[in-house]
Structures are given as structure tokens and as C-alpha cells.
Length: 161
Ligand code: ADP
Image (cartoon, rainbow, N blue to C red; front, side):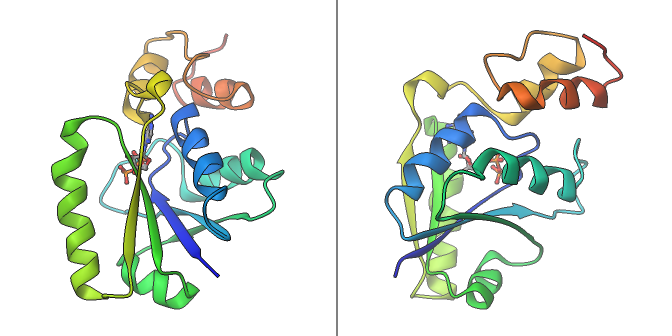
């Protein structure tokens, strides 16, 4: 039974994240999308809002659940009985950071392995921060995020479309 966590900020969730969830759910038995409750980061959406958007997005994928966590990922994984971490690699810039975190987690708990999926070419430029920047200026975000979330994102910037 391969139980994996796909951790991230998902602030907000994008088509890139959705693609990662669909592809990794097809590889593992159970996937937990873990929204990091990082009090140090100034987030656009609250953790509860992010969790509920991800739940809406994944409701038809039977082996995916959504949860939030704070503190160390390895501790949360012990709690949930998960041994795999799923992360996405977009560009070389992601690599150095991801390598370091993956190795640190593995040293902390040798049972923990990180699997990396390379980004779908279609979404390799896409990040939550790009979405936030576009939305803040009323730009078109329909190519970046699932349609059901567009109004909620603009609303955070008091933009009515
Ligand atoms: P974090 O703050 O942990 O980087 P993100 O929400 O930005 O959280 O990303 C969560 C994970 O999803 C990371 O592994 C990131 O590389 C991956 N990811 C983000 N955007 C994309 C994308 N467009 N294609 C593939 N993976 C992505």
C-alpha cells in the first residue's frame, strides 16, 4: 500500500497542481494533498479556503483526500502512515531546493522517499505567484486556474469581472 503526500501551499491551486494530482494519484494507492499551514507566509487564501477548493477539485478522484498540516512534513507523514512525498519539477531553479529538502527528509526518516514528476510542458511556466500577480491587476487567469475558482481569486483583490 503506497500512501503519498503531495505537499504545497496551493495559494491558489492551479492547472499545474491539478495535473500533478491526477498523474500522481494514478501511480500511488492513496494520495493525500497536504496544504501547508505556514504562518510565516502571507497567504491570499486561508488554509480552510485552500483545503475546500482542493476538495472541490478532487472530489471525483477516489484515492485522493485533502488535509492541512503544520510543522515538519516528516512528522505529519508519521502521523498519517505515509512514506512517499510527491513534488513537481518545473525548471532547473526548482531542482536545487527540492534536492536539498528531499535529502534532508530522507536523512530524518530513511523510510521516506520523494518522487518527482516533471511538469507537463503546457504548465511549466505556471505558479501560484504568477496567478496572484495577474489577478491583482485584473489580468486574464482563465488559462491558469480551473474556472470555478476564478471569481474567488478576483474577489480577494476586490475585482469584479
Ligand atoms: P510550495 O510553496 O511548497 O512550493 P506550491 O503550491 O507552489 O507549494 O507547489 C506545490 C508543489 O507543486 C511543488 O512541488 C511544485 O513544484 C509543484 N508545482 C507547482 N506548480 C506546478 C506546475 N505548473 N507544474 C508542475 N508542478 C507544479
